[in-house]
Image (cartoon, rainbow, N blue to C red; front, top):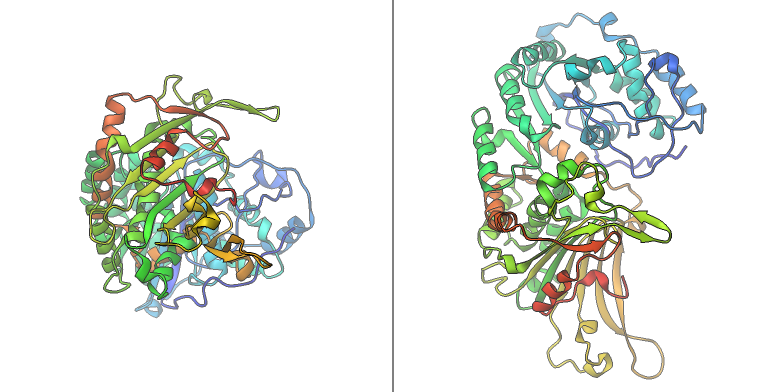
Length: 600
């Protein structure tokens, strides 16, 4: 059983809150098989969830999916320890204590309710993020967890509280160590279930009563995380707002993308949400904004004198934002076919990074000051032309005796689908700082590798004395700053230097900050940072409605043209570098994609 680094992500937690949370589970970066849980404990259900342990918050889980699958046993010792140390928790119904309401006057509590707790997002991301925050003491120690179950799936779960508790324990088994048992017991003692429908106000009234029991007269603050399909966002918000809002504290709602399919549907969703919530109650989450290297982007630029003077058209030749996955839709074809790679990745993840990269220096680090500058960038962008967009779709391919399916081989995808799984685009910002600098984006599935990075290619040195050493390929002499968001987070600067020895031979080397080599601490998952920010009311990494409108206004005309004209995507083999058309697009602006160099 692997161990978990004891390094902390948070130095302390706020003592003001006695937190309530509801959460889902995240797939750890490493896949470790779990011991098989006794059928006696789980009935006919077998599970093998993975997660981090973490210390505290009131948690309510609204669950709507199936259980995870069983894995082969590899080590029974942790399970034995699990049973001895953690399964002796008395069911909540049997150990409810009388609470002196007057003693809690003036105190506050935070309840986090995850609506849709059995979905993939909840199980793979939200649950582990909450466990991690609790374990790292980033959340208050007084934690109540409510599982809000959709009645459709209520019969899928064991009926006894102790068995439900075991499901959570198994989820954290991977990170079990000598210090985990006590905190896990504390955490799980505060977990509870509630069954209901997401569009039923009566069910949310019942939820409100249970929340009040745990809040025990304290100032109640409530955070709802909508881990549900977008078509029921409004119903859930309506019920939560009218029937389960905090009476004397704040109420916030985290909304997951997609935020519509185009400008019209996005605006309609915003109007519907604002019937029940104020703008400052809506936290539109884009988890890429919570990634460590994206967070470091503004630090790199604004706190290092060597970079800020170079951050303009005078020195930067082009900027590339690259996202690639080495797998296809993997059973998500039905969802993906409705949106495509432009809506799924480019319109949100990559465009948000572009706005952060290109914005002017904000007045302060206040959320509104930063978001104001991002909106200015988006509104300054030239309309995206169809000629500056290349789309592709992966096809089946056999390599090394292994056959890889094409996009339309997915049974959930129509055989005649024209939905792009790859897209490249050239965008321009029409302002004094970036006039004429191409911002090239590309994103795709089933490519040759997995990466997400920002590449900044600087201009050639005027009258370079060493041009003859590079021959006609001046790009070999170009300085390049690379910010690798994932995997293997790193920042490196490509420079030219002399190779030691007689003669004058030049080489291109990297000044490299590799995070795993420089820092021993584990990098927290993006959802940990964003959940903590939502609890603390920090909106800097969440998307404002006018920011969303500006982003959609840039891509909606092109998306409509692609769909109305039924433009056929260029097909590329599974596992390749993508369509050839992407290279022609870059060449039109005298650019070479930086991720295809020999040194990569």
